[in-house]
Length: 243
Image 1 (cartoon, helix red, strand yellow):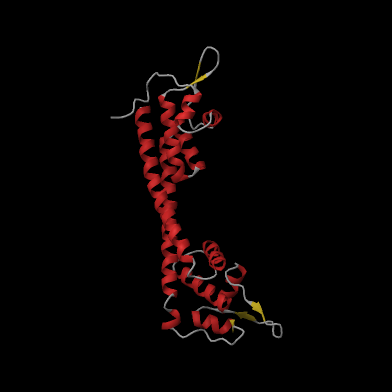
Image 2 (image 1 turned 135 degrees about the vertical axis):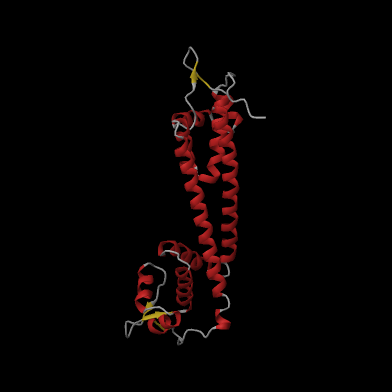
């Protein structure tokens, strides 16, 4: 049975706040932001709310975990302007972003899997005790030296310079970063999306510690997906009761 949000029952700001674990100031702020429909007023000017306001607040709070505070706010504002299609468009954009994030994660996981057997299945990049130069590394990856220089400008690899010749010298960490970048580029990932991952690999001290981060990333995406379902259900209930 649907909630009877159209009831004429009056709720004080404190009633609405306590029912959702908020402060009365937060409730007033949400009303002013358009997240809630305008409150009624008593003859003395005090705000009064109804179960319909409670439904709006429940819908908003359910939307936040999946869509973020900013987008959830835009969704509720659109609903209260009567622009329901605009609200649906915002929801669609969030789902598209989640799908894009899932594809990015899959590309990263695929790239890491491709890197795992490389040391055993492929000959290593020719290098001396101090590292390797740009030509041999580019040849091993099947790319042009200019591509490695582009990656360097983007912060994806950070070779040092030989003090005698000025040539770029790539150590083991640089080679790892170059190979990971190469795999991700083959998967269609833009450089600006690869850079944060490379930074995370460096901070983790290699690929192995990154597995825990990928597990957490996957869990966060799943949680977002479920939160979007919950938010959709609450919003649908609110829209149905608004009529």
